[in-house]
Every structure is written in C-alpha cells, then in structure tokens.
Picture 1 (tube, rainbow, N blue to C red):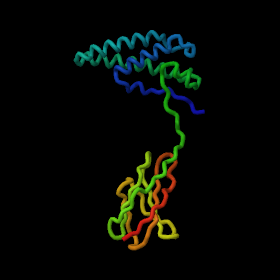
Picture 2: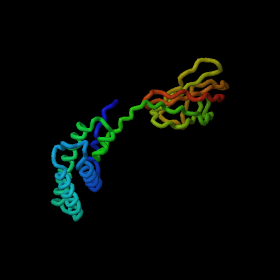
Picture 3: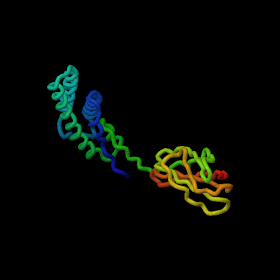
Picture 4: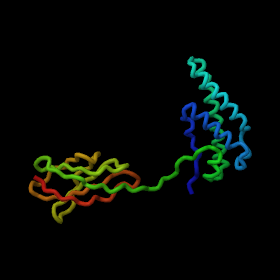
Amino acid sequence: MASLRVALGFAKLPDGDLSDFGTTVSTKLENNSHFTTLPFPITRLKTEVAEFITAVANAAQGGTQLTAVKNAARDTVLESLRVLAAYVQSAGQNSLKIILSSGFEVNKTDRTRKPLDKPAITNIDNFASTQLMIGMTPIANARSYEVRTRVGSGDWKNAGVFTKARNVLIGDLTPGATYDVQSRAVGGTTGYSDWSDPVSHMAT
C-alpha cells in the first residue's frame, strides 16, 4: 500500500481561500480524537487566522505598509499549517479517513498505468504524386503518432513519427500501388497504443 502524503498545496491558495482553509483545519482538529497531541494549542491557529482575515481586509484599502502586514500574517498562518500538516502526516496512521478528518487533503496517489486509446484513421487523400495526406483521431496524452504502410501482403514499413494527428503527410510512395496504412499513438504511461485498423488507398 502506498504511503499517503498530506498535500501542501494550501500554500498557493488565494488569501480568502487560505483563511477558509485555516478555519476548517482549526475546527476539525479541535477535540479530534485521532490527533490528541497537537504540536501547539489549536487556539493559536484560530487566533492567527482571525488576525490574517483582519489584515486582508485592511490591505484592501491599499498601501504598502498594510500589504506588508497582511503578507506577514499570511506567512504566520502558513507556517502553522505546515507544522500541523507534518504532525497529521505522522499521526494519521496512513489512513485516508483519519487524515481527511483533520481538514487537510492528501496528494493524489493514483499511478495506475493507463493505456492509450487506439487511434482511427479518419481520412486519406492524394496530396501530390507519391504522397498521401492522412488524418487520425487525436488521442489524449499522446506525444506523437507513428504511421506505417504496406503493399499487399508485404512487410510493414515505417512511414514516420508525427507530432499531430491531422494533415500528416507521408511520401516516397509508388504511383498506382494500393497501400494499407496504420497508425498508433505514442506516449502516456504504457508507451504505445494498439495499431489502428488498416485503411487502404491508392497512391498516384
């Protein structure tokens, strides 16, 4: 089982959201039976949040000094939240339910390998002599698309790797030959998707 990590993204919250978050944490940690040995009395955080809310309101009136006071109050709240987050991380018993009961969130831990969807060739057009223009369905999380061709029952030949799914130009083809064309997505967590169903078209 992967270790749950308390999220520290609260440091990026806007002032109003941070004060709400601090209020939530102080409320949920107060008298929480899972967290009985807090590193400092929870009333301290309540006071710091209240002072921060006042500083935010004062700073809205403008002025460098009031803004500096607000920023200092914000830093104080953040420091206390970081200390509490470390404590919750240690005392949370790697339990999602217990950690969430503190008001803190956890980092996402879903690292499941998700295969890329198989693309489909939506159109093939003659672009110029010996060249075909191909369109494919875009695939989420694909970095690029690999295309291959074959004539009849011959071997598949790589036709290139392309960074887009539309207006893909492949060349060096034999006029009058009918080509089977396939594509696959490249990227994601599994490397490659399955090859698309082949589509046939005659080069000119």
